[in-house]
Length: 92
Image 1 (spheres, rainbow, N blue to C red):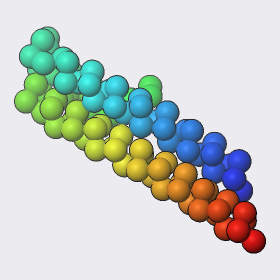
Image 2 (cartoon, one colour):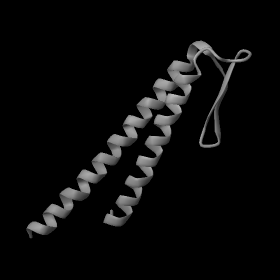
Image 3 (spheres, one colour):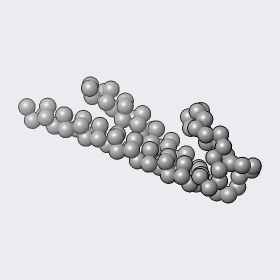
Image 4 (cartoon, rainbow, N blue to C red):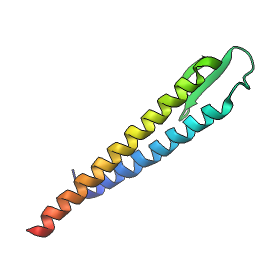
């Protein structure tokens, strides 16, 4: 993979990870202030579930946190691969 395209993917992954992290914090901040049976969970204009019970909101928040960590780790691996390939090019 070319270096520029790898950095674009890294930037997109980091933005996605930040958005996932923010959504997780937003879900945790809802707490028990829910009208009716539950809340609707949306991410990037897509509906994930339209009736999440109050008891399940922390589970969804943890899911967003785990997804955020995976995206950050994947971007770190791509950065490491890019730096490692540049190190090989310099040593030649």
